[in-house]
Image (cartoon, rainbow, N blue to C red):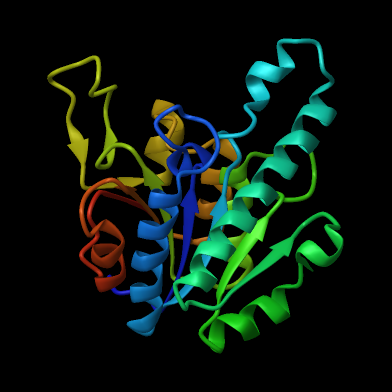
Length: 235
């Protein structure tokens, strides 16, 4: 499956340095280079990035901070990562534009699907920041929503493993990897690829999801070429 328009979902932790916090300049530069090459190949690229390298909402909720506040803090963390990614992409010669679901003044454009689609058509990489703009929704759900809104051909979820397994491969040596899996199977078995709302949104709109290992050499190029490295979730 070779897609013309792909939305990549990246976790904030993937941008972090060895300490697991902040952003790694080397990681940003390598990622920007790969994304630039993907765009140069004629594929329209959009991004949604998490904020876990700056803020982990679940842990913060345990401190007694209200869930609504926790989620707002997480939205700001995604905006920080979006700024870092946009800077790295622009420095690499790949035009990038941030669109935010919450007002960020001069730091980002307001969320506007029509304008986003127009920018993608012009060859810009669009980075969607601040999740859905509402609390109680994960960045996985935001990625699913944005992918559907822009009419992406594929939602590519970058992870630290090479696909979806029937059980945790880090714990079980006999874990089996799926090449393809249905949305309903993911939900029924509680496989935890994405939260249930995100999976259901993709299922209801026929959005295929590729779960792949971002750390594997050339993985973004392989996704763009249609090689489908990892596990494809579809009907």
